[in-house]
Amino acid sequence: MGVRYIPGLDALRGFAALLVVIGHVGLIKKELGLTVMDFERWNFFNLGDIAVTFFFVLSGFLIT
Image (cartoon, rainbow, N blue to C red; front, side, top):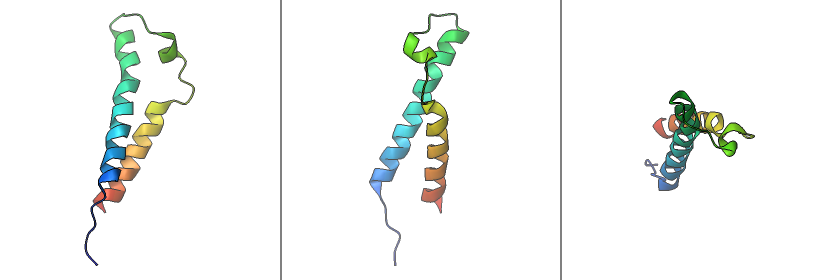
């Protein structure tokens, strides 16, 4: 049994990393004193935290 490469998992990991970056945009804007849009204040699903967890779990799976 050889090692199989699944490119779709790399795409999911990239999407999770993108969500983390988008989640930080509101924090950076607040730190710089810029106006924060309403959807950035009201973060119902807290996607940044979920994306970080998903990214690390998937990365651990891909490494092992």
